[in-house]
Length: 276
Length: 286
Image (cartoon, rainbow over all chains, first blue to last red; front, top):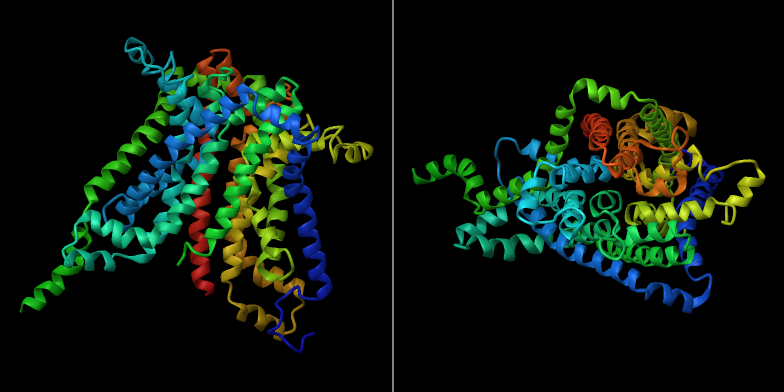
């Protein structure tokens, strides 16, 4: 065994290796894979027809629609923000860059429930802007704008943190060459920068979508959980669960799980490409 | 002569030559100000409005203290579990080749991708009396659902990728020469791990554990399903803040939220310092 020190690094008696792999696989199957499989097992427990009836229930369809709309608004805005932030930080030098990067990362460490409370204290009826919003007949909290805003908060870093390191690593030589050749800003971005970052951008957008679709705590605070009105799909899962409609809850949860699985597959496919 | 002036002038001016600086920085600042900073400032202003005495009265009330204790205890249990399980996963995924390795690696992203409410629902049903695991554990006299163990379980599920994904790249980057040297010197595998490998990954591992702990303190969606939410028994701090909101007690909610925010920011700083230490470590060991 010690004859070939290159073949294996420590811990490398075959038996030890097998035990560790077995432990890792076993724990992951029980702890991570089983909950996911269980969702589908329960959702289809009473057959396809019951499943379809649950998904096609008007309240569930409305929740799916609301979640979709939210993602459709949030993800492009987030992509725009991510590109702007990465362009400013990676391609230019200015004082306070480090602080800016830290601020971009803040939503990662703040609990969504706190984000929701922040928004309620700002836009809610008793909030700082509450009287002004009411005077102008604008509703933010307990309506779509509040849901969108909180989701924007929670997902803010997703695209920026994927694109930024890549742009930084690529430097500015190519863009400078384009400037010398007389390209304008838009041409530089679409023909030089964008092709270099497109996979990382897509990767960030996929993660952002998954997060936007699944957001629960923050949306729960600002949406008011109004049945059939401000109930996003994750909130609808909770509502059905509290109604003791287990099959319905699992059916709704299975659509969210499916979205997560698709996101993971795209992510795995992009993993290799985004560095290139 | 002209060449000399461009040579000296270029590096400084070059950074400013690229267009779009004002537009991109302006967009970034505007977005961050309206989406992140102003709402957080609204919370801090609310805290200031409550005043130190009122603030203290709220957060030192028995129910709030119990909620903080439960949250911290469960987060600690979850983080200890993840510290070990996450390290095991990172090690196995980097060091060994086996069938299904890529799938195992992809499974480590499930807690990030799966909505927390779905995770909570699944874990609750799985560990309850009519689930797959509930009856087995019940026979062993272990109750998970509606106890602090359930809270810790939900926290562990949602935060495990932080440990794995922080340790993994550091392990991948490690110079094999160090371990080979130890091996040629006759060190046993366990000694090589504790004396060579572990010190090298320690900063990253601690940083991952800190982030996982921070995430556990703030977790809400997965926990409300499994906790049973009994005051003084299984009520976490984030939920107590939520309940205060529903009672229109905005001061109560804001005070508890501020404490959680304080924890989050302190842990963010600790984690960043550990990351800096980790990256210095990495460069030194390369």
